[in-house]
Image 1 (cartoon, protein in one colour):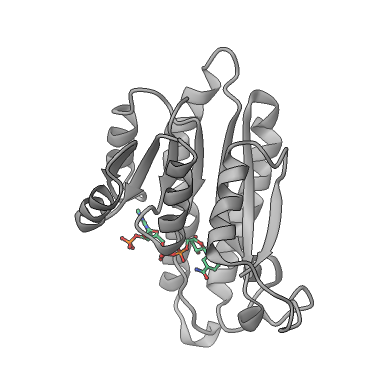
Image 2: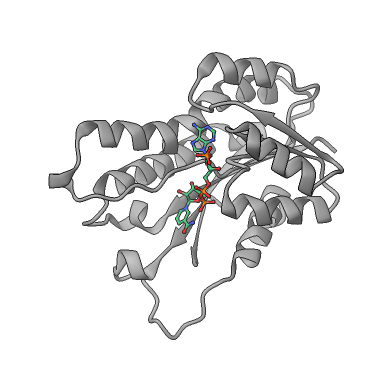
Length: 223
Ligand SMILES: NC(=O)c1ccc[n+]([C@@H]2O[C@H](COP(=O)([O-])OP(=O)(O)OC[C@H]3O[C@@H](n4cnc5c(N)ncnc54)[C@H](OP(=O)(O)O)[C@@H]3O)[C@@H](O)[C@H]2O)c1
């Protein structure tokens, strides 16, 4: 079984996701940006885990890391991302560029290296890529328009990639994490409806990357 790649592996959602993957017997390649996260993960999970350190927006570093993989990953949970709020009138184009870089390019840059490797595999690999989106990427958000725009871009990118490559054995999906308190839109749940705990979110991501949810491009979960 090829390992599952988890990018943004130093983050909060990743911590629970790594636990679930390892409990279910997967080998995991965890991708972090900071050495301290590498040390922390290796201390916490001693078996079946490799940790690589690189900034996902630096093309040369990313290429170097991926070329050192002995086998291509059998699936990819992409959790690297950034929330940064701020109303339009308070933020600059640089703010938008940063969010596009962290929320979109961190998927694009590694995928440019991984996809040709997957597509060259015979037989077709059956790989699932799952990324994390946000409710505001579906509906917009007055207080964080650039964050919303970056997640909307990620959503359309994922759908387009799935349309292009699912038939060739590489499927793409996006889980939109809905925050009713932030988005207050007509997809928000009333406050008395229970929301999923982090552990269920992590479990869903794992089932998805394992291909157990079938072919699914999008899923909204209320956290
Ligand atoms: N938590 C929520 O309520 C929520 C809601 C909606 C959507 N989401 C999405 O869910 C995903 C995970 O969220 P989270 O709450 O777990 O966030 P988090 O704790 O901030 O984790 C995000 C991770 O991405 C990493 N990262 C960012 N830029 C990177 C880069 N250029 N190269 C390598 N790693 C990079 C961060 O590393 P550093 O620590 O080194 O910066 C961090 O470990 C994100 O896409 C987020 O937008 C989360």
